[in-house]
Figure (cartoon, rainbow, N blue to C red):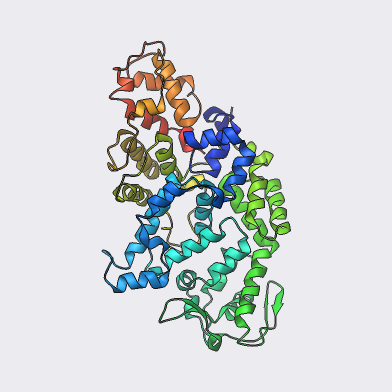
Amino acid sequence: MGRRDRFHPQDPVLHLLRRATYGPNPAAEAEIRDIGAASWLNRQLAPATIDDSACDALLTRYPLIGLDIAGIRAKVKAGALKFGAWDAMQQLGSAAVARAAWSKRQLLEVMVDVWSNHLNVTCPYGEVWDSRAAYDGLIRKHALGRFADLLKATATAPAMLSYLDNRSSTKAKPNENYARELMELHTVGLIYTEADVKDAARLLTGLTVDKTTGLYKFDATQHATGAVTVLGWRHDNATAGGGEAAALAFVEMLAQHPATAERIARKLCVRFVSDDPPAALVSRLQQVYVQQKSAIGPVLRALFTSPEFAAAIGAKVRTPFEDLAATVRVLGLQPEATGTDGVRGLYNYLVDAGRAPMRWAPPNGYPDVAAAWTAPSSLLVRWNAHLNLAAGWYPKPLVRPASMLASLVPSLPATHGAFIDALATRLVGMPLQPAHSAALLSFVGKTAASQLKATDAAVAGRLPHLIALILDSPYFLAR
């Protein structure tokens, strides 16, 4: 019997929620069972149709995340920020955690994280102090649209141009950094030649950042003209004035390239299906991507309705970010009535675990495979967080259910064994294997047949420890 059979319920609804969201909670499960998986997916793929007013109200506590470059610069110049230029980037990271935990637009939030990693611009990072919030906004705008539109938006984003040095690229001295990463990381992969890199770098000259305003501009005086050939694609690039259009045509070509289609299909399969996804599924999704001219919605719909996805229950391991958000969601924790200390505490956990949103330093983004996130040190941070959150020890400002017991097990069973089964089913979607239940029962000094009273250790002083032990297990670790 394989691990996915031993540790996961064969419930397609819970499987979809574990992959397309940051974790099931009662409200999400009730919704999907009420309207059906197909309608639920359609709704998630059209996030503007979802009322997310409660999360929007929470995000007003992070007023800098919606400001453009001019707005953030004005705040810094006026001395209105406690930590100056870093405040906006700190707010952005905390807001990402809040959205993962409490937004109803869950698939959008998952895809924002996917693209934030694929098109990584590290945050916090000194060169993007004024532009990283705007960069997050454009990723959100295009996260479920055409990848080609997203790629072109990032190619003219001051944050990307600063992070990968294209703002300093000139016709006299083209900088190859962005040209190389645009192909190697963002699109076609390692199929280019050094000659391709040089021509691509020349073509991208002139895409820069205004030194006064910090805004994107195309500087025709710094665009290197002359015919270019990249990956067999040729452009006359005859005039400096036409350089911007030529560069964006190049980016569009890269987005539509068959190699890009394969890489995006594979990346989505790795994120949502398995670390080593089935080749047949990758190939089918590649075809959808090409046919739909890089539209991501149809690719995701084909992925989530595929037999390969249905067969992949338990085949992925949660990252620390996913684990923490899923813990908050399954325990029914809520943000404090005012302030941001609780969410900041969650963000600090992720810093310790090495998986705080947008914080990966190299341009390749966080890895999304089990081997990267199952080291003892990473697991220890998770286990500490599980107990602290279950017990309400840290972050203290988060609002807990009036009764954690009643929230998780509304009707108290007659025996300890039935209680462990009910608690596990609420937390991980299924009862534990008999040997695992027996281990938890021994922790409270009971047997499965022992009569249960409200004053017993299992439902009183040791309840947070029982919750944490279940969340520490492979039942919860895998998604």
